[in-house]
Amino acid sequence: MTNETQNELVFLPLGGSNEVGMNLNAYGFGPEHDRKWIIVDVGVTFGDQSTPGVDVIVPDPSFLEGEEILGIVLTHAHEDHIGALGWLFDRIKAPLYATPFTAFLIREKLRDHNLAEEVELNEIALGGTVNLDPFEVTYVTITHSIAEPNGLAIKTPLGTVLHTGDWKIDDEPVVGEKTDVAAITKLGDEGVLAMVCDSTNVFVEGTAGSEGDVAKHLADLIVPLKGRVAVGCFASNVARMDSVIRAAEAAGRRVALAGRSMHRITAAAKSVGMLSDVQPFLSEEEAKIWPADKILYLCTGSQGEARAALSRVAEGTHPFIKLGQGDHCIFSSRVIPGNELPIARLQDKLADRGVKIYTERGYPGIHVSGHPCRDELRQMYAWARPKIAVPTHGQRRHLIEHGHLAKSIGIEQVVTPRNGDMVRLAPGFAEIIDEVPAGRLFVDGGILVEEQGEALRERRHAASNGMLIVAFALDRRGKMVSDIDIRSVGLPGNTDRPLEEVLDHLAERVEDTVRGLKGEALEDEIVIEQAVARTLKKASQKVWGRRPIVETVVLRL
Image (cartoon, rainbow, N blue to C red; front, top):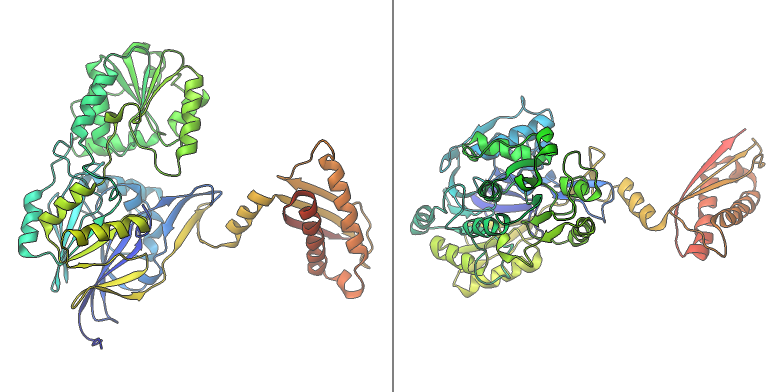
């Protein structure tokens, strides 16, 4: 039986386990009822067709509210690691710690939420250490698809945890330093209790590939092209931006940035000395008149985002980019699962304008992943030699497969937690000891709402079933004293029976229903509304095979 006064080291994912994105991880130290916590990353994920009207989703930090949080340590600046800070800070208030590039982007995010003056943001040098007793957190340089990615060596009185963050092994990262193998190996020599590790590419054999190789492939592709050239890539990948810019300059082209994120990331990169020796970017006014063979547009929107630069180019509505016959668009990015359809539509629209499309499928060297494949995972385990493997950052199948891989290379203990599973790392055998509330909060109209909130539930229902709005007037005795007006949203007519005729029939059914009510029922608007809704839902089921939302307006005269 656990002694309640015994110190324990626990790991608690509240986001990022059983999903890719929305990372929020917590480490606790102390006895069960008096733990001190640090948080690693506070990220978002993004809405899809199942969340109409919701663009941003954040992890639910309810369990940590009111706990003693010593600090929030950020590994790198991807949105799925820092994007929820503005939304959640008031619930998990604590000092923030980040390296310079990440800190630059966090400041912008805090300003957007009017939190810049309220939040203590501490800028930590690469390789620096943060003392948050009983935790000592040292930044470990790794490589990934963004500037200044970091792993974290989290030292405690009960052992050291290597929290990898997002990573890969890249011997030619284009910008930034190579993975600090010496630091990781030294940690292994000293003894790593547990490694909490990225699982994204666990099903992919081999290695992810190098940004240096991508730079060569992009130059080979871009330099000979004639006409206008646009390149879509993730704005956060400064190495990729650097490679595209240098390929453009080698081809005698100047670069114009298209998309707010491109400007934001280049500003962050230049603030830490990156992109310092490239030619100035063209202004929008210059880009409008620059010769076609002498310009390259570096664009947001490679995932088919509706409001991003490439989508507006494809629609012909971009203010300064016009692509057509003889022009080229290079997608130096992968297709994120779930984005296949919008990307295909985007590329079809560009092709319809006469633009030649280049993707990693036909030109595989123009993109590489930022996450470790199986050979890289084996290498990281060989360097760190942890006693415990804790796979994170992946869907369930990724975590389970990662666990199998760890066991196959001799890791003593493996735990594959879901969001909300509290893992005791020490003392004793690693195991899940508790399950705490974990869920998602939706940013809906600028307001944080529960995942199962009524507004989104109704919106989903309306999206698939449509709506009927019915209005009529009754006198004080409940007698109908107006026509019944029914209007539909999202419901079809057909050639045999126009929609107006269907609605007239439904109006007759409503009139029959109201006339059938007696006594006190006619005095209660709620009873009337419920009766009308039942009637219209049943009738709609027969007409359309759907049960729409029914909104009834009863006027009393």
